[in-house]
Image (cartoon, rainbow, N blue to C red; front, side, top):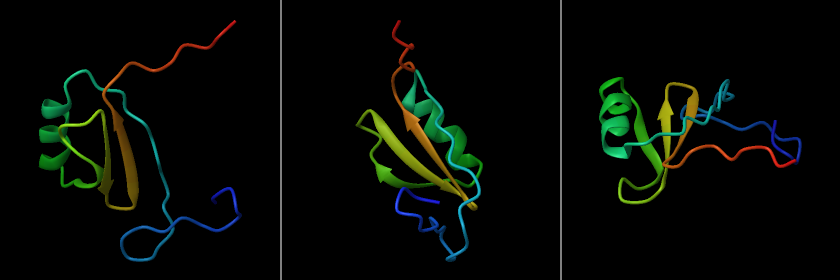
Length: 72
């Protein structure tokens, strides 16, 4: 469900089941891995610091930076 209450949809109009974020140190190597697994780039670019991938009904976010630590 999105914030508006509508369900997100995948490539065939079915509901997205998974939307993980995978923080990566090497975008090129990470993209080669995910594309060899069948993922397609649907957002961002290889040259940027963010790529969104579609792999089946999953949308995977690849930010090229470490996750933020919780602030005290």
